[in-house]
Image 1 (cartoon, rainbow, N blue to C red):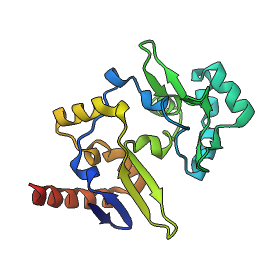
Image 2: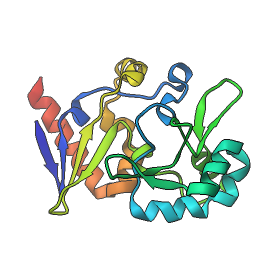
Image 3: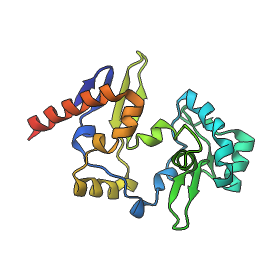
Length: 194
């Protein structure tokens, strides 16, 4: 089912499905797996370039080399703007901790107070994928991916739905007023579904 909140249309799965990342189990594999890098907005390329000095020491030598040769972003086979990747896998901003868990160097720098930009909104909003239509309208849909099966289990365990799990990035992207409208719509939708 499709819902509309303001100018944004979204699939009802964003309201009905459970989700909460479980990094202990998945090890951040979403930063590694996939056909190309993370989808980007044009203005995010400049943000990524602006944080390079703050994250450079956390990037692998291979990632540094890719950035030196090709930059932080590229166009993938589908013609979409995405983050550059290393060896056909890792996003150039992917780093690993001692447990082998992936994390985003840009997000780490943001959490440490070194930068004011966190990471691409497509990463922050995952498992929601955003699509822009020719008329300028924005659509949101739940992207199901096998690597996230533990996140579904953890979301059920915590009784946390996708839109609740993604509260902060949804507010960052669409604003608090829009998010509050989403919550009201979600409450009514879930009530009528029971």
